[in-house]
Length: 214
Ligand SMILES: [Zn+2]
Picture: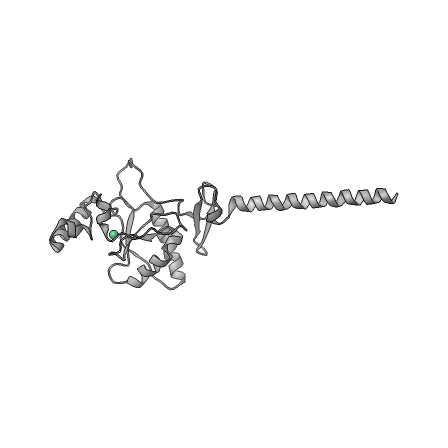
């Protein structure tokens, strides 16, 4: 009789242990499917911003949870052949800036865009002005690119806190990568683009905008 009881107890405890292990594995899987550090990601991750508490969340799902704003899953581009004329900032770039702006505000830092989307005509005018100011097209292009090369008419670049408020732009330079924003030119502390996925490291800066003329 005692032997039967022992066997019964052994079977019951094994079952309990197995159930516990199964539960542990299941809950782990749920967590890893929905939320995990980017380093261990096996596939494309999407970064989402919560405007209420200025926190970021990463998911492998194709869309952000309700109420959260998508900051995208990679470098921001308009693709090879945009189908419509571009007339505004890329919505993901705008979302990334808004997210950074909210986070900066919590630290008492004021961020604002002083120049975002520019029409081709506006960019041409700015380039012409720069040629007059700097004396040659090459010198001018270090500061203002011709319309067909500048990322402003593509809606892919923003100038932040220019000209008089460098500390704000400095905050963005230090913290922007979390939101997928990078300063890209060594000679322009105010010019930011979205060349990475949020959370990645920004690439090394180019000396100036001539790098985009090629
Ligand atoms: Zn710019």
